[in-house]
Image (tube, rainbow, N blue to C red):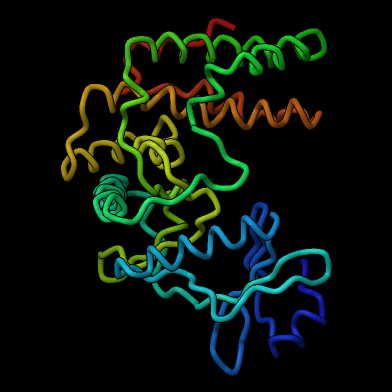
Length: 286
């Protein structure tokens, strides 16, 4: 179990109660002046911290509970730290993806009215890696050493590119998306969505990009529930799979650049198939 440094605890007068974990950013349940709160250790630089705290302020004005910062962030022990309000409620039920889809539609309707945000530091448009020649060069550079991985990636890359042909991606709508609309990042009370957590992937993007981790090519009920509230056009549906694969392939390329072998997760997720994929549901031939 990782514990925050004593210097950070002293600076804010914290009592640490539990390790809440995290993927890149780490979190702890703490007491600050007798009130339950969350301490975060940031993985990224100051620009990333400031950006996300601004997003939280914007979303809070819409009425949902979000982990607003209780004070200014600070730097110490080699990282940025921030202290946040505790967001009450229970995680969304995993067995009801349709409800999650309806909530996502509600969130998108509200997010569309927010002031425009700049590009998130370190991010680029979601579909850009599919058409970037640098992607092909990276795969070619690693093909001899990792032929099976690269063959899988290239096959899905080429099919995603073909699916984009004829679509007006430049003219698509764009507004803030959550980026990780999964059950554990939602807070529900009495059957209503009341809170949102984990904005580390939040950014301005095509709203269909929010289906990447919400749908994952398997939770078709999320798409059905969303369409009950905000009908999806044929173009929206055509972009579901390319945007999901773009998310996976971006992670795969980052791992190749870093020299980190795939643990099998990306390969498994790329081969998930759903009827919603249409012609792209054809199995990978290996």
